[in-house]
Image (cartoon, rainbow, N blue to C red):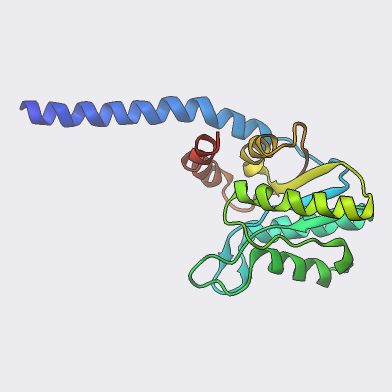
Amino acid sequence: MKNGGKAVLGILAGTAGYFALTAGAYLPFVAREARKDYDDDCDYLLILGGDILGADTPSPQLLARMERAAAYLRAHPQTVAVPCGGNFRPAQRVSEAEIIARFLIAQGIDPARLLPEDRSTTTYENFEYALPLIAQYRAETGGGERVGFLTSSYHMHRAGVIARRRGLPQPLRVTAPTPGAAWKRFVREYFVAYELLYHW
């Protein structure tokens, strides 16, 4: 084999080794959190947004989060929810926060319990923009202090890390199921983990 071919094989082998090593180090944390069924008692609950199909159709992932949120809010009538997510995809016409809020209201949740955050485009921004809304609401109403978030099981690890970095040392959590093939979402988590490094 010529030297050029050996160099290419070496690069490919090194790249494959890098991915195997880093995935092996990171994904066990994702899987461990995904196996837990969190149902913490929250005064405020961020409902993290998810994919939108077309103009305003929630993906199965987001629908599962919304259904879990509706059930949780019915069981915890004191909780104030913060639907999170902006309007930033080319075909999208309604923000994720608005889609979540509409669903919850249709499920019988009082609109007065909702503080929509409709600017964010990432998980990091979900917390960056939602936490000041909660702080302002608490200052005006004297509400409780227990802040948590609701997201899909596969997303729980990364969201928890980001929550701690955004000022919640012990964030409370509520788990929504992951629809479809969970392993695909685990693979995605590996490739978007750069968000943790970018916002270190």
